[in-house]
Every structure is written in C-alpha cells, then in structure tokens.
Figure 1 (tube, one colour):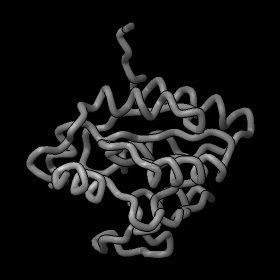
Figure 2: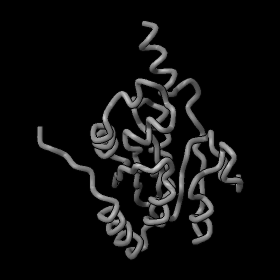
Figure 3: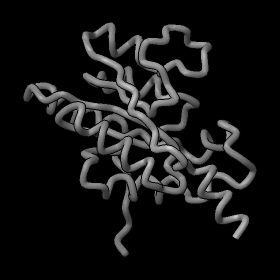
Figure 4: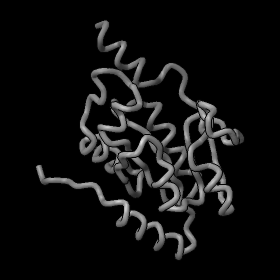
Length: 167
C-alpha cells in the first residue's frame, strides 16, 4: 500500500482560495471520525450538499485524547481516519488539526458554510455553551452561514463501541 500523507493546512488553504476565486462555495465541517458509521456519512453528504466543495477537519490523536472521548480513544490513528474521510466521494479535501477546536482552521480557510451535526445550534452565540458552533461567528461575520444537520437517531460512535464491547 502506498504511503499516504494528508495535505498541510497551507496546501488546503491554497486550494480553498482557488475554489473561492472560481466562485465556488466552500463548506467546512470537522470531527474525530474514529469509527465511521452511517451517522457520519449522513452528516458529510448533507454538508457537501450545502455548497460546491467540502473540506473536512479531522482531530489529531492528541486532541482526541484531550477531548475526553475515553481512555481507549482514538481507536484508529489520525492518518488512517483522515485517509478514510479523504476517500469518500463527497469530500474534496481533508486537513488534520491538533488544536482542541477547529477555530484556527476555520479562520485560515474562511469557508462560506460551516456545518456541524444537529447536537449543535447555529443560532447560539455563547462560546461557552456546549451547543455553540466554534467558528460560526467568524463565518457569519464574512457573510457566510452556519448549518446544523439532523443526526441519525441511534447512530453514534459511542453506541457502536458499546455494541462491540458487549458482544
């Protein structure tokens, strides 16, 4: 198998600038994507439908551990998770980031649309609230929009791992 390396933030930023100069609307979303399931796919496909190009931020391994997802997380290393996401037809670019939030990535890429799952609220303006969409203020300030995609009931990484552990 050929060695795969995700593009740098600078490389993705250059690609986004090209797309934007061509009049294309760039959508950004992010996540851990540790154990890919139909809920992830539904959000990614809906995110892609919000614009012309979809960029996905993937949390690196250190940031996943800091997020407190569990002592055994991530299950898959960041390069594998990023490669799987990059292989999806609806995804145009992937960037791995190490901060606790994607704020710096959002500031660098300046997407037209910011998308998160339905457990976030695009109208929430309180950064300390758990439903706040990090980067939404910045995207809206440049004339873009924030969108929450409804979650698929019963589909989550936590539920999937619970099924695996109890079987």
